[in-house]
Image 1 (cartoon, rainbow over the protein chains, first blue to last red):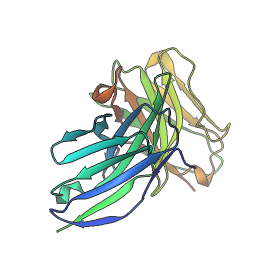
Image 2: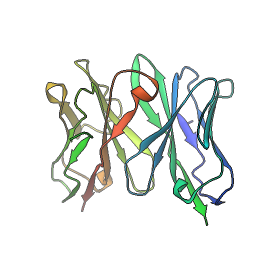
Image 3: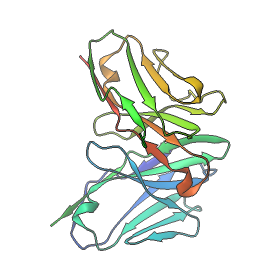
Image 4: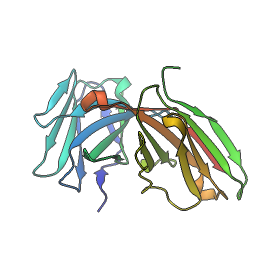
Length: 111
Length: 116
């Protein structure tokens, strides 16, 4: 089983819709979680960290479910500019600074 | 500069040649990572440096790959006897101290390697 798994998509979603995708991780000892965004032929950039209690940043909501070992990202009122690949990132623990990336979920917002 | 700088941005080489890729991290960042990304694929961890600690080399795919970080700053990734399967974008990232957003990875624009 991969350490971090994501549905590669593509998700083709009309503008203004709500879209959500999940990411599962295999190591229950994982401590920190992040969503990164990568535009085509660009470098990844941090979108948001994922906190245990869930967190929101504008139209974006991230949640963590430790019992089922997954994190989710919800995008409300999607914009054309949200089209990108969304990468799930897992940090094992504070003694091991390796960050493991999922393969990404490609999202295309359709006008 | 303010961001992570990588060079060269593009490198085309012949199979069997050695290549060196350079990364200049954000000043003051103690952690430096190398990843590679093949076309349409996710990021594959290669190696991680943290301060003066021994690097985590667990992601290096073969002994043809090596990396060093001099003076806790600039890093060089070396690929010896390149093979066609080494073709990818090699991404360097640096990270400051702390968690949450303060522990954010900042990526360079990558070095695109093509092995003919």
